[in-house]
Amino acid sequence: MPQGCASICSTINQLESELQAELQKCNPAPPPPPKASVTLAAIEVTQVIQDLNQSVPLIAGKQTWARVYLSPNAALGAVTVTGTLQIQDSSFKFTTVQSNAPVALTPGTTLKQKRDSWAASLNFLIPANLTSSNSAYTLTLATVSAQGAGNVPCINCAATTQSVTYVNAPPMRLRIVPIQYTDPNNNIITPVTANFTLLTSWLGRAYPINQLISSVAAPVPTTIPLATLFNTASGCGGGTCGCGATNTLLSVIRVIEVFGLGFGPGPIDPRTHYYGMVLTDPNAPNGGFLRGCTPIGGYVSSGPVGLTGQANGDWYGGHELGHSYGRLHPAAAGATTTGFCGAGPGLDTSYPYPNGEISDSQDDFIGLDVGDPTIGAPVAARDGVTDFDVMTYCPPYWISDYTYKAILNGPSGLVAQDPSGNGPGGSTSPPQFTSGSFVSVVATINMTKKSGKIEFAQTVGRAYPVRFATPNKASLRFLDATGKSIAEYAVNVNAQSDVDAAGDTIGSIEATVPYPSNAAKLDLYFAETLIDERTISKTKPAVRNLKTTGPGVLVWETTPAAGPSLTYFAQASADGKNWDVIAVNLDKPELRLSAQQLRQYRQVRIVANDGFNNSAPAVIKLPAP
Image (cartoon, rainbow, N blue to C red; front, side, top):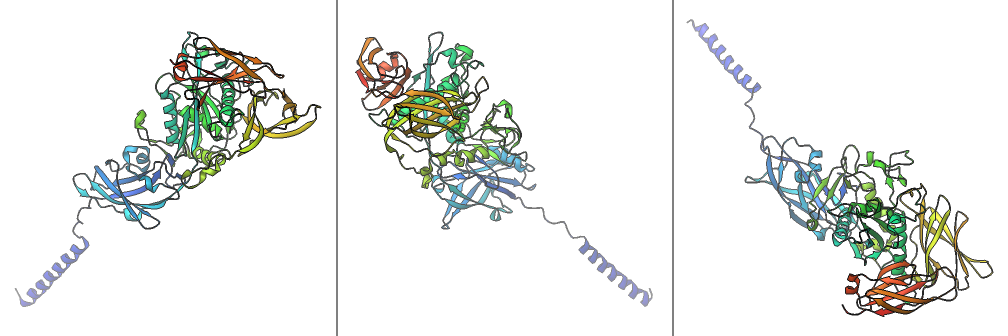
């Protein structure tokens, strides 16, 4: 080959090599496969209902969970992980919490799917000492560990934190009153302990409280005929039937227990709500089902409990007690007669979510039922669009953030009814009574027909201030012997949560007002219409010759006094110190004790009421069983 050609070929070969080298740079070797890792979508700190913006207040002292939502990348694939959560408080103290249980992660699972299932999130129980009053801290997911493979890198855990604070809430005070009746087969029907437990458990899990101060009263036989107690026909109106009549019974018991009898204070805190339970009995008229109702913003409610299982024993009481904290039936905007799923009048057309759901259609809010192993209730996430607010008639029931916040801070919510309980840790001061000469009045008003009745009145030695006002007012007016008005007091009228069977709105009054010593008559006015009146006797009734005429049968005589016909109530005691109300509104001087009462109690006392004044109690000792 000529020398010139060799030189050219060498140059071409060199250029070819350089070209191939440059081409290799344009087509680099494939990168190494990605490392297995997880990504953190959000940390949600929740007690009952919450969104990812943490807009629902956390109640100090209430069980709290952090839900952590993780996604594995394709390299990691489906995996089961645990983790540790680091909590930093305002003083820069760190607490490390282990996840409650492993969680199985699957690539492609959406954030909504994770929030909708308790089993799809990595869950951490916040230590109780970190949920105290005014606690504030920041949470960071510190480590993620795959089972059998050690720690897994988290792409964004260090940068994805959640900060929370806690607020105080007053305790909820509840007195459960078992309403007893005898069915047509002569069976004594009484709610049982399981019914009480279901209600208190549900309230503790779903309400914005960290403390439920509850008690169960002695069973109280209803004086209402069964055909009236379970009557929902249109001819049974004015609050004289069903739950309306039962609530009147509860108001009388509450007045006796809270304000005492004029010869001693009552044992019950005036901030206590009363809930009457009536056990369903298929043998009773109309199936023995008492449809519940409540004076809105009042202190008494009543409703049914089922024969077996959890039927009506939990959420139903939560619904009725929600009315007592001012909540109405959620309804669509513009609705006038019917709420979601057929709920009756007493509507809240400002409810923010469609169809009574506990969230908007984007499922921003997810509920959490922390469960109760003592009753077999599991921990469960509550879906925002398939669960419904407890104030609707749409099952399954939970509580929305709207209702939750209103029960806490609404115009007649927990804080309004007990402002002293909003201190550190929900601490509360003793009730501040005013001593003096007062009269407690229980009345029912048909607000539609402007009619009604003073159901009960008794003079008492103390009063408790009203903490909030209702939209409707009535007037209690005292007159002297000449008919001159000497005192007038505006009092709250709490409209019942449901209209009666005739379509009328029924209102309840439970008020304690000063009693002028020269008063001869008490008038009740509503909308400037005289509703009812009571003549005030200056001579108190007296009970005498209280005795037994047979096993469990007590009879007595009375000294007549001017005024309406006498009624009687009875209390019983096992120790002579603590007294249970066992009967009210008796219209005959006779009381029959059950075999259980004869075993339980050693003394009974009878008090007569003439429509205004109570007699001194007549006491009889019972023989030992």
